Image (cartoon, rainbow, N blue to C red; front, side, top):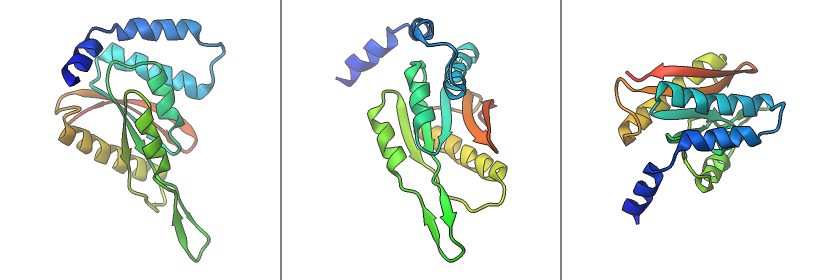
Length: 163
């Protein structure tokens, strides 16, 4: 069954699927949907091996999967840490589990962090996700990947060379 699925996947024209989905998309797109489609287009143009999406609830990852990228999407669920000055609470792993039912998404649950700066936390989580992807064989040294995440309210697409 695995061999049949791999052969069927290899025969698909993913960029043709992407173009068809883009033709059917309603305009104007939401900013998040525009970001997701841009990540898939960028992955195709630079021949990336993987798309890494840092997400809180999983909706960004599902939007990326909607555009049928030809590469796997590593959906890194970042837990939310909250405090009321006496105790700390961490959100559940539910977003990571929910991505299991979406085609092309590979879930990964990141560690929570109480750092003062979102930039430090994001870079740390992205580095850990890339290390995990290398260990699992989704990418290798010298490959190019696309990273999609938010920093202080700004959505960012990065082209990252794996080292």
